[in-house]
Image 1 (tube, rainbow, N blue to C red):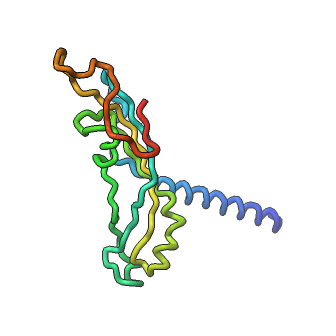
Image 2 (cartoon, helix red, strand yellow):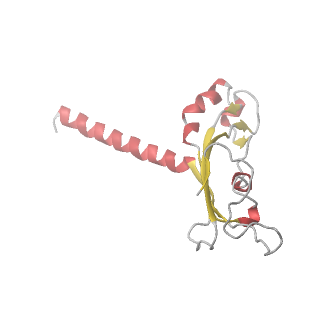
Image 3 (cartoon, rainbow, N blue to C red):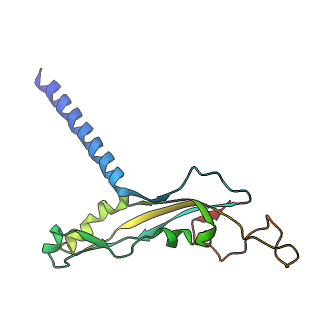
Length: 163
């Protein structure tokens, strides 16, 4: 092979290795907290979905500068399925749940861990949820809303929707 051909081949190998590395990082940054999709949708349900950015910062288990660089980390603001799905309604009325946390933006913010000498890392995470909400049962003649009436709930945060 000629010298320019070797450079092109080496460049292609490097690009392929970079793509595999980035694909691996993306796979490692997405975490599915719960996935119950595929169940039949109960009659009369309302669909609830949304997403929001949240702080999922981490601190070193041993928060001593420089030593913390080699230590595992602990989440400061743990993202819990029940807390996320509470935007849709009471947990006993939520079915077909799916909650996913995407921490891809934590990769460029690793600089905050370097600046804090390994003690703390800022991590903005994108949390998305998707669920079906079963309306509350109403008794006829009890003054309740008729079946299929909209559910009266507290206002939802930005990014949340009921369909």
